[in-house]
Image (cartoon, rainbow, N blue to C red; front, side, top):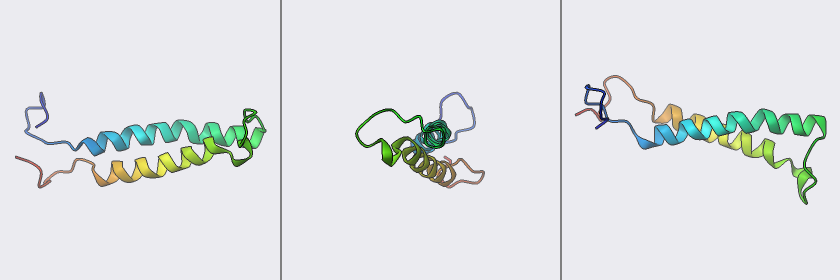
Length: 80
């Protein structure tokens, strides 16, 4: 049960995991796009693959899915 709300709601840990993953993705995605389009990649071995952009996109998609899938809703069956 969520402590301190006084409503007896249960929040899934996956909602918070999705929110954090979405936040990280929304930070990495524009930075990776800027690196790619401005040709400012770090001089690493596989920089031509643009990993910051692709990881940002992947984290945004997964975070968005988990945030929407496990969001708290009214009339949820997890209420006690």
